[in-house]
Amino acid sequence: MLFLKVLQVKKSRVILFFFAFILIKACLYNVWVVPVRADSEQGAEASLSLRGTYTDNGQFTGEEDYILEISPSVALSAVTEITQMQAAADIDIREYKNNNDLSSVDQYYQVLGGVALEERVDIDVVGTYLIDSTFFSELDETGIVIKKTKRHQAAVNPVGTFWLAPRDRMQLSYGYSDTSFNDDEFRDYTSHNLRIGWLHDLKNERTTLGFLVGANRTEYGDNIDNPNEDITDETVRAGLLLDHLFTERFIVNLKAGARHSRSETRGPDGNDTDGSFGFVGEVAASWLFEKGNLSARINQNVVPSSAGNSVNRTLVNLGLGYRFTEKLGCGLRGSYRRSDPLGGGQTVETFGAGASLDYRIYPKLDLSLGYSYSKTDQKSASVRDDETNRVSLNLRWLIHQPEWRVRGPKPLVKWPHRL
Image (cartoon, rainbow, N blue to C red; front, side, top):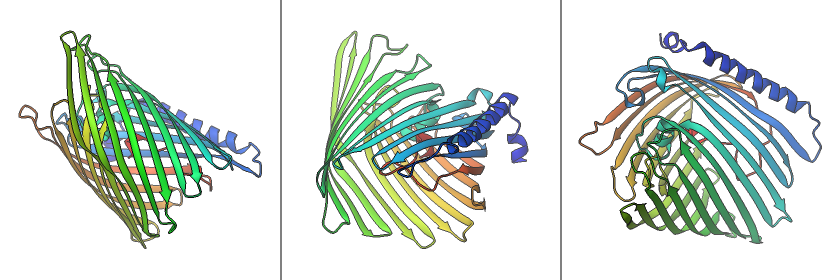
C-alpha cells in the first residue's frame, strides 16, 4: 500500500526524472569515448536513488503524508599527478501526496580544482551553488525549525597547504558565501571565514599535532519586519588539534579550543552589542572491526542560520553498522542537537534515532528499509514539542563508478542534506 500511494505523483515530475536519467547516460557515453593519456585519469561517477517515505508529521504540520523522492547525481572528474578537476551535480525531486505546496526540487552543484606546485605547495579551490528548501537545510545545519522557502547560496573556498619540512605543514583557508531567500521575512546574509593552521606529524607516523586559529564574520541584512536594521556576528577561535591512529582500525581526531563571539545590531534606534565566551571543538572516533564499524562524533561550533542570527550549535552523533553477509547488513544511529542563538532567543533541542536494513541485490544495486524517530523541543510554552516517525524504502543504483578516486583529502562531493 505504501508504494501504491507514493507513486501517485505529477506527470511533470516523472518527465523530469526521465530527462535527468537520459542526461546522465548521455554524459557517461560522451565522457568514456575521450582518449585517456597514460599519465592522467578521467571519467564519471553517476547514481540514481528512488525513495518512498511515510511520515506521521510532515514538516511539523501534524498531518501524515507520503513522499516520493527521485535523486539523480553525477560527478565528472579528471586527475593527473599534479592536478585534479571535478564538476558534480545532485538533484532531489521531492513530491508530497497530501501537501503539494511542500513539494520541491533541490539542486546542488560543485566545482573543485587543485594543483600541486613543486611538491611543497598544494592549492585547492572549491566552488558550490545550491537551491534548496530552508525547512530541510535549517534542520540539518542548525536544528532550528523555520517555515519553508527557497534558499539560494553561492560559496567559494580556496585552501593553500605549504610544506615547511617533511613533517611540518601550514594550511591557510578562506571561505566566502552569499545566501539569499525568496521570502522577505528572512534576512539575506554573507559570511567570511578565515583559518590558519600549523600541523606536525610525529616520527611514529601515527600522530599529528596542530595549532589552529580562525575568525568568522557574518553580516545579516534587514527584512520586512525590521527595515533599516542590520546584524553582524563575529567569532574568533583558537585551539589545538590531535589526530592519532591507535591501530589500523581505531582512529581518534580531536580539536579543542576557546572562542569569543560578538553580535551587533545596528538600527534606527542605535547600536546594541552583546559578547560572550565559549568552547569550540570536535571529538571524532571510528572503530572498524571484521564485520562492522562503530563511530562517534561530538561537535561544538558557531554557525550562521536562516533565523537572522548565528547560533552556538552542539552536535552528538553515534553510529553502528554490521554486515551479516556480503549482501545483507544493518545500521543503528542516534543523534542530539542543541542550538542557542547568539544575542538571546529560543533554545532548540532535537533528539533522533534510527535503524536501517540494507540488501545488495546486485553489485551496483542496493535496497534499504529504514525507520527514524525525532523529537524537537523549542523550549517555549507557546510552541508544542514536535515528534516525527518516518518509514522509508530506498532503491539506489550506482550507474557507473571509476576504479580510481580524486586524490585526498577531498572525496567526491557530499552535500549538506546527505550528512
